[in-house]
Length: 152
Image 1 (spheres, one colour):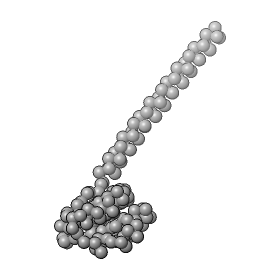
Image 2 (cartoon, helix red, strand yellow):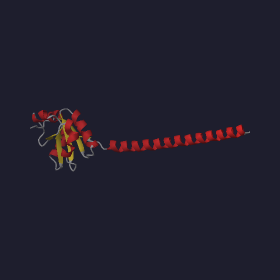
Image 3 (tube, helix red, strand yellow):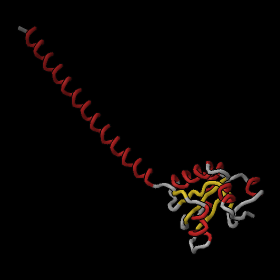
Image 4 (cartoon, one colour):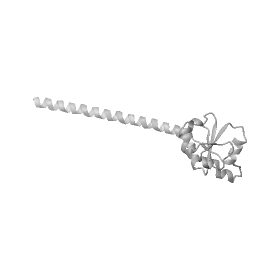
């Protein structure tokens, strides 16, 4: 008779252990689902803050000739900047932009450009990921010159 009681106790203990393990797994799964839902909500918010593309003509109409309070950033190298740039631009190379965000005002709209448009796209991402709003990617100075606008 002693063996039967022991066998029944083991079955109850195994059953309790199984129930406990099932509950732990269920809680972990629910926690994981909640974590993933929160992560995707944050990703959606981050993704919704994006820069806008702007053409050279739109820049001239909306910024250069308008009353817009903005900063124009040339993200090319200093050598490229010194070889010719758009009037009023400041030079912050894209490779340095992350470390020099404190030089970029957060109370003005920001327009970035480079040579062909690749670095300006990267700079736009750096700025928007840094929390800046009102960021415009004008692409490259090549398009600016093709539109007939001057450089200094």
